[in-house]
Image (cartoon, rainbow, N blue to C red; front, side, top):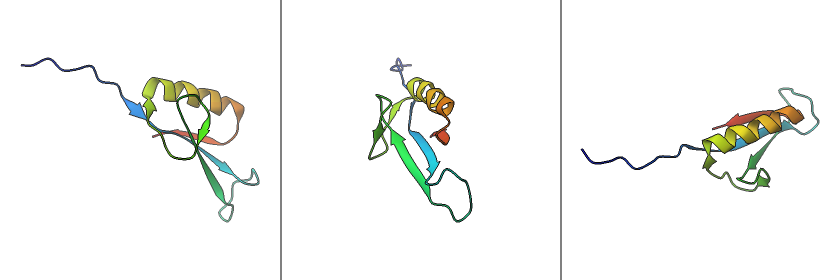
Length: 70
């Protein structure tokens, strides 16, 4: 058997927020994607899973909205 190259799990980090801060069926939901530096980006970016989970914990502590690691 050949050797298996090292593998890095990659994920996307997404923040779901509501425009008025109130969850409701008719409220508009805003999606904000985050990049490697922990800053919002326009398009979804792949980042290492370990970093994605670390940034997700920091964002969740701020209480901005629901944080997802996809």
